[in-house]
Image (cartoon, one colour):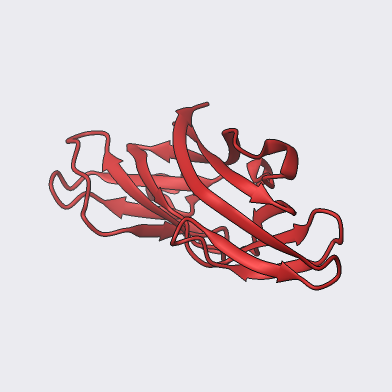
Length: 160
């Protein structure tokens, strides 16, 4: 079992507490087989809501995958207690947002999509259903009459 941290980095304008919303939030990943090195073309997602039993009664994981090239069964599990929001003070710095426990897999890419939420840094206005697929998001905070945004979204993976 190896733990990988997904580090998130963005420039925040008048927002804080950027976070994945709900147990059904989809973490879209590209996963490399640790046995043969195969990386499938398609994006795959894992959620906290999904739980699949592991062979041999070794517990469960968010997803169990069989490598199409070498047929090895691998798994990935989201570590619920490691999910952290990205705040205004983190702006323009990498911060670990979530950790994954991997058996036979390594995450090599992440694609942010819909399901993020944030709040106005000064107003507390809630902004649900933020889609970061374009790596940028903008809106307007009526309470404080100023624009808000999340820009230049990027990421990296680290071993934990």
